[in-house]
Image (cartoon, rainbow, N blue to C red; front, top):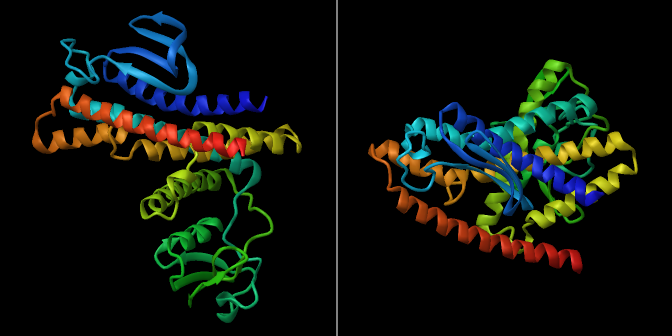
Length: 344
């Protein structure tokens, strides 16, 4: 059962991404030859109008195949024959739909369980917060110039600025104060701490507050993803530690098994949480300016805007093909590591 649930969630996220491309392509009058869920050989397909809707063998992907996407086409409805702004809208729509999905699911989640307000339940003895006189009930407003919306924003800031002295803006009884804190390294926690103790319960917001905090929730996961990418670039995280589709499906399945013991609602909310994380992650990853990704295609279009002339579709197609091969190579390495972790 857990495998079915995991594949279903993974497929929904990818399907929604491709739906963004599909709807904007149709809106811009672009011919869509095939809209598919999965990769590899076709298991089932039905043609409706000009588009074939199909289900592929491997449920780890999807595609919105447009006429003239990677080659010259004489069809005036081909992707390459549309204006650069029309093409940009189609390319950006996929990641944007992932962010929309993350926002909608975040609203459902926060409406049920609330959010972790950055209000202290106390301070840890021997750390900077205690020395500065901070206490239970203080609400963290900013760390340096970064606005704090959730308590976990504090951990994310510390993760991306390890050991840095910071100016904390906090609120107590409606009055704002500032103090400078230098975090201390905790061997037990394996990271730097200011000495803040988080809230013991989540804050239930109104409908309008939940809408606002849903935006912050998506923003949090975007920033978390970017922080992870930075760690890979700087070498803090190695490629061997990355998880691919196999690892993600395993993670979703394990989370489902653990949460279902507490009831179907708990399992549903846990899966919502993971879907928000993964959908925001997919949106960010696809916007990276790498060949074969949406961001790589977008980069070619931005070059076209600057030079006033489109790059040859054949040359662009060759770049994306090379990028696709490199990505498949990376995926194989990551998949090998996923399988090794499962077997060990």
